[in-house]
Length: 258
Image (cartoon, rainbow, N blue to C red; front, side):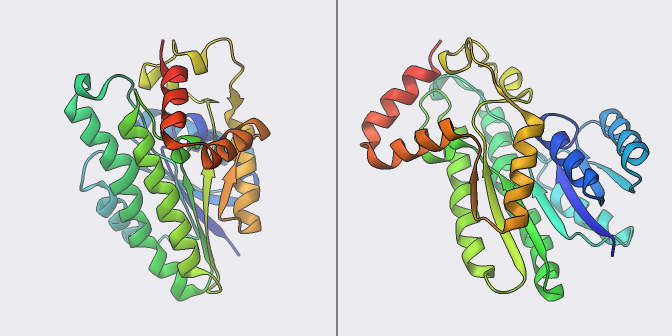
């Protein structure tokens, strides 16, 4: 039986790596991102290397109408999605009062609204069929307040909370929900967020995107609700749960500073 995975933000970084992992496991793909050229390059590569079918849907999830258009494209092409991978997301760095408001609202649209809407559009079909998975990409940022990236950290806290609640709601109904929480990863995220210079990213070997993707895939297959990549990240998350929130915020601010 042919299985199909929809991966958002699939033109680079963790999204591209996740698409490659699903392709290697013989899933057909629907890949979406803002740039058609990179998506077409990925389509050709995956179809040639893995012998699967790849469908390209160009969409900017910062546009409020994008999730509905993706759903319409799926229906018009007769595609059934077995796995939804909500990977698309971005962050911005700086004091909240100095940040560009349009960038912040775009981030909330991509990181929260589009993720939630795509899940709402595709989850009912999975439940009717009695099979399927949702893999939401959050971050270790989900577990702490994030001075200098306050909106981004808060958006990932939403993804974690939403995923955990949804995993409980669908339990025993043939569908799983997994929240993948990587730490700093070699994905291009730092360049877009303009925070390559901060302490947490300096003189540090970032996790490979492919390793993070493979870890997330395995967690999804096992039906894990939460998957935190790396022992160091798991230790850091544990500390956020036992230390006072005010202290965690101070530590995060130190690490996020230049």
